[in-house]
Length: 306
Ligand code: 13P
Image 1 (cartoon, rainbow, N blue to C red):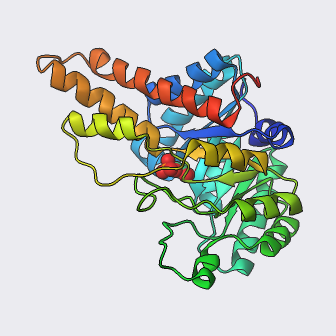
Image 2 (image 1 turned 90 degrees about the vertical axis):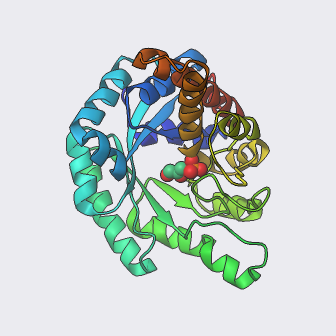
């Protein structure tokens, strides 16, 4: 069933589990996400970025996801990932999204508040729930001084002010994760004390971006099938499970499915150079994505919650 983001995330926050929000661009990724959610009885968010809207067409992709979501036996929300403007958020709502993110985190606090509040007012009038971001994600190098490092991570007092003044429904916080396959030189540092502090001060669901696990065995299969990739690192399963105990309720994952998709395609083409049936090429990719999705739902604790 198609629901808003809050309908999935408020129970998750209260029940101390996380729900994955996976990026999609096409049919196979969307099916892997929604069919696995049904298999595991897990709620799920399917997120679409502005890049995905450009690639697949907002209407084409939204209608595809919405149709699968409506027919699903578990709650599914269609979420706008990193909406860059009021206009982008409004057009997403018009297209059928049930959850949107306005990302004005690169602005100063006052401007981030103004922009977010404007989107929240419009979205709430249409019954849609909203995510915003405070703090700045990025790889954190060990040589960075504490003060400088802190400047990028979300300040707990500012987070409280931000939520009070914007009325936002769920908040993305910077806690040490970062986007992409290269999250650090070794296991990334996750600031659990900061998560616990913000989680104690705010009762709304918190969001962790950049939460792919970048599993070593998938990275190895990528290399073994002819792919080139450097020293890739992701967020450890136990870090995510711990974060969900302290307030993280939405966990964003894109890179893991990109890697799984590409490994699936590469392995088929490497093993069967004569193959040119798209179903035989994309089917195994869909299966491999489903395996990673299943793992994430178990780690976060969303499996069995729908
Ligand atoms: P990953 O790059 O870790 O998958 O994070 C994706 C993300 O946060 C999208 O908003």
